[in-house]
Amino acid sequence: MSTLQPQPELITLEQYENLPEDVRTEVFDGIIYDMAGPSQTHQRILTELITIFNTYIKKKGGDCSVFPAPFDVKLNDKPLTIVQPDLIIVCDKEKLDEKRCNGAPDFIIEIVSPNNSSNDYIKKLYYYKNYGVREYWIVDPKRKTVTVNYFESNLISVPYTFESIIKVNIYDDLFINFAEM
Image (cartoon, rainbow, N blue to C red):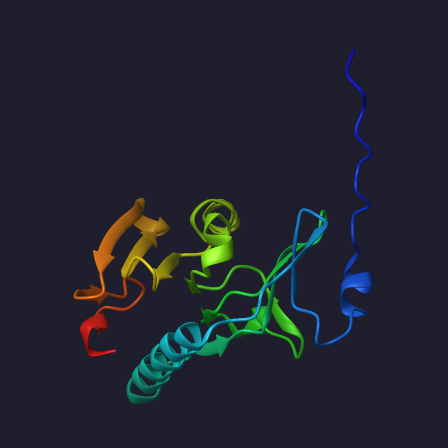
């Protein structure tokens, strides 16, 4: 005979917004999950990528904006789903308010932390694909790989190494040379 498990209480947007600012969390289908702090390697890679994307967008006079974590992305209201990707690019300014991006960004990068790799490779891949993110990269410093998921053309899980030059598919002429990082 099986016993019914108590269901967790789902968090609301108001409850989420009232959390202390120093608490790093994400919410998937109303359930809150704590996030670990980033490592030095994580931050070094993130800084390089932000610089590359900002420089490219400024040179092109583009309309897109780059945001590093912590910056909330609300993918769904009910049940609440809010993530804090390591880097996002948003081209639709209507999705932005002073608090967050409301809806799917065009481009997301997650830099894998050793203690939560399944979040990036499985859980977030599922959510980002199903909520309309155009392109999602998983940068894995431990494996020295970059997995590119370009959902617009059904390119899912194309692996590269840190020795590769990788095309950013949402742009016609942007390539990132990971060997230079």
